[in-house]
Image (cartoon, rainbow, N blue to C red; front, side):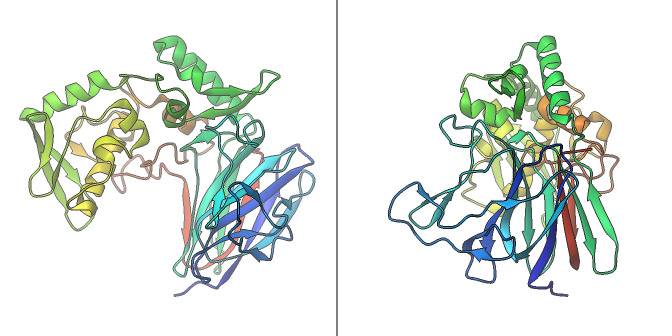
Length: 378
């Protein structure tokens, strides 16, 4: 089955704001993977040309107005890879272009970004010839509550509830409470408005980008204990792919998977980013090592690597149950109505059919009819 070449997306204003603008960005799969942004009419694709200068403005208005609370704007998108649906409350977002063209997206880690003090967020999707796949992303930060419902041609639907209207406040309160318990710096992830109210909560990785000293050495004792254990105990990782279950042990400070590759001890930065140090590029057996690395990174973020020598574990109750752990991820999941949402880069890793279920909060279907994305919580 091949999907239709376009898809209707319903953008719902469930907030108390009369002014919300949406933006849809990505790569146009049916037009040479060109950068595409939907125009403000919600129907016309805009393919930016390469500007002469860095930081040039968009040539057209791409802010899609949602209307007052309770209203819905229905837009139509082409097939898009790496797509994002952005929402900004009480203001418009500023997107800029670099030669290429390259799109300069809003940033929460750059205080000089023109959007830094605005209230915005996004969800992620890919709509290709096989399916629509979408998720709510908290990998970088938490801000505006977003929920999703996908209805297919047969009328069946699936949903991710997202956070309630007070979700950000709940996350911030719990970050403060966790910091009072361990003094690790969780409260430093909170970004407030000039009036002192929470604007967003950063992920540990984003927080570290802004403050290189934040969480320094946080995971060291845990990683040392894991490496000590797997010096004498084999670690079994189900790659959930063609390589099946692979076994590794530690020798001379390296976690070795014979015939595939090795992992040095990751730092806290490596664990929160899931993409640096031993989780960076793999010179050999990249696909297999990537599968192993994803499951190692997930186990470390959830702090299950020491308690279970078989990964991924199906014991959901073990997630975040041991200190140190990624308390941001635990707090974010707890704040979601259905407990689901991408809180770190490999939050989609699971045992498959285990008690943990779907952690990442995804919707996907090969025959999508209507994708509804609501902003504001309930």
